[in-house]
Image (cartoon, rainbow, N blue to C red):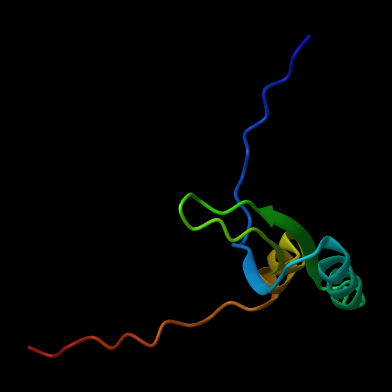
Length: 85
């Protein structure tokens, strides 16, 4: 029995830094993981021919669950003014 769940996109990932080895990238990832509000991952970027620069990118984003909690607390009032005719 399969259950189809709809995939929801979270906030975009941002590249913090690029490294030539996984060990360096993993060390940076562990430093960034100390912050509880961030999700961190190491992503291998193979490069494209003829530019064969291969590197490991450390990417971060805010935790989607935390972002949803913050968005429910803060609701902005619109500052739109009506024009008089």
